[in-house]
Image 1 (cartoon, helix red, strand yellow):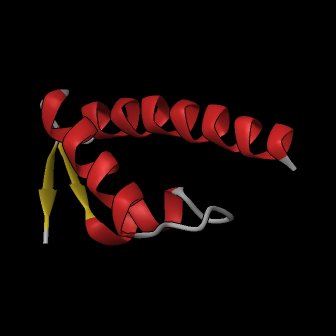
Image 2 (image 1 turned 120 degrees about the vertical axis):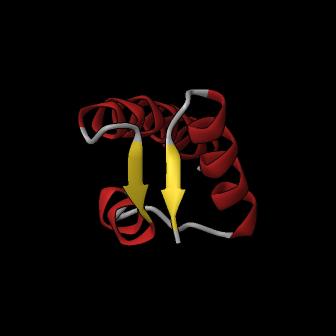
Length: 65
């Protein structure tokens, strides 16, 4: 089970990088629904959403709400 969590963290980090790439292709703006769609298959709790939003912000990608 611990290995599964480690793999999930690695996959989550990889998805964050891919999400930023998508944001940059879309003029540095993403919609909330695009983030949900991008992370299908992941359980997004409040803490993960904060990480996503902070990561996007630190990489210059804005979020439309």
